[in-house]
Image 1 (cartoon, rainbow, N blue to C red):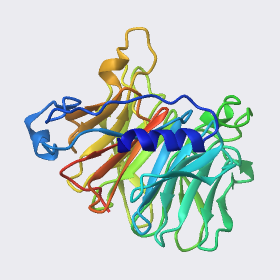
Image 2 (cartoon, rainbow, N blue to C red):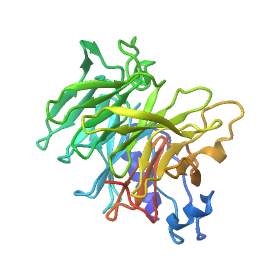
Image 3 (tube, one colour):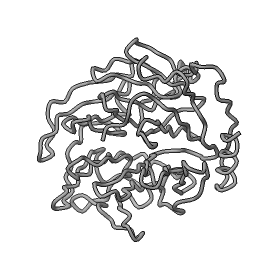
Length: 337
């Protein structure tokens, strides 16, 4: 009953958006959790099942967990708002509307909210008093495209991807011509200087660090013929080297946002890329890869998953922003710090 009440709260608190019913599995282990390799079995909690926490968004993205308040923020880009899910009560509310077409969300080293804004074509930080500081909106005098996803390194450096997805039409931003190439940027923690660190990826998208912070993973979502995840070594000054392929979707799997657990596994938003030969019912959800790039598990969802994060009191609850809805699953691992 709790899942249905949370779904209703989200729908009533929201601007119009399709909401869907969802029936959690009554059977353990949940058949939606597929073990592709024996090494994944230890991460599956036998008595944990996929739950829908709410439905009624138009395109759910960029979830970020606030453990100090036991709540999660998630972007609903076309509805131009950020929603808040309260874990303690199961309630939903609007955190920010309008959100300037917010997409990726993260927290900085001091716990403040970082936001990728398609509408403002910028990166902002929400201060403790609620005021908003612009961290980056131009590079060498030219406007950013539409910052997509963002992560804060342990040393305080802020990294984000900047493809033109949000300015390609009027659904997730305002249509405009790009002034800069597809790129990955770094904001220096000491000087605040914006550095353009990569321009050779087509549609850079989700990004995440390894548990030790020495490897940066980046999704290339317009790679041909299939989407890819690349790994780079990161030095103390933020220079990248040793580019190597970690994951090749090898078909119509639509890699999107990613999260890394404490063992270095990559939990990847997954789904159909829309090609005629794709089978969405087999692809939609989360595909899990070990650090060597072997697919070891899959969490099947009834919707394509765009992005995800770990949270909850033990950092072992996986929150999955999937098209219209937010799902969650307890797993036997924790998100990397």
